Image (tube, rainbow, N blue to C red; front, side, top):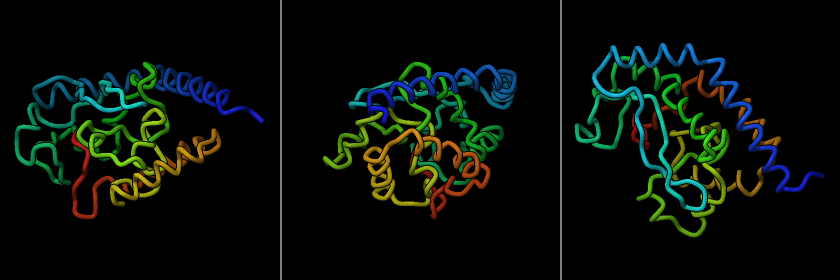
Length: 204
């Protein structure tokens, strides 16, 4: 049986190969998205924000900008609701199909993130973590994860944490493959994009 360290090396290799393949195959599509964002509203194509990764280290995450410039100082601040007026026309489409998350492929190539893992947390969230919740920081955060394919924002934060920790304690390459195969169906169904009350907890 392959050792855990060997499996981690394989996981990293898969991350790199898949991320490079996505970038090459989808480059024309990404250029079209970038153009539409620029034409639709003033501001940069990409939105960058600080997140906490493996071992509690900060890193800069990337997304396609889906809200008006300076959105965090407007309206509900960092909270987002389903029909938030700060979300641009193009941004609504990007969010509906989770395309705003695609630039995190760059984070995967840089080694800040993995294709599969717990979603990256905000610093203020991490500072309130219990010892149990700190287990989320034992692995790299992911673009998709066990919690994302099992309810996403429809489940409570506490339940999402439990699912993330379960994933870490039971991790295998086969489990990663299962999550990757389930992710397209979750995205296409759009279930869990917003919480039961119409909110989403992660700004941008």
